[in-house]
Image: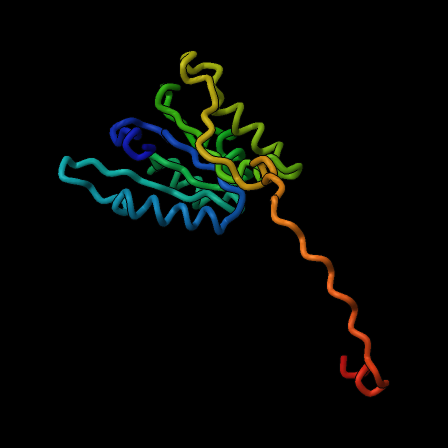
Length: 174
């Protein structure tokens, strides 16, 4: 649904995908690139650029964002928030065309990531979005956010008696 919602003719970053680790960023990037055909144009001449933003922010990353901004930015919280605050990562001006996707939310709200996530939420925030878009839709939840499983009704087996050795030599082997 996200790729079909992104308009290749609109200027600026339309979707920001936030993931807690570099490994998840790379996995997600490869899937998005395959689905977007690695930025090649389709029959109608439309092409979507997908870019990963992780690690330290450097001049090469800033130059690429300035000259060829992606339609979809995938990254970890720290570089995304740094680039959004500095204005290098320019979001599309229309708030109805912006999407923020967060995966592994329980890891993203950890103490060391929360300042970056707070600035991301403020930069892409729903306060200027129309009222129908100001809600958070829960698509899936990681296992740590799900309720604990119900108790099993199966009876437990009584513990087996301890093994005793009849001789000191046998006790050393056990």
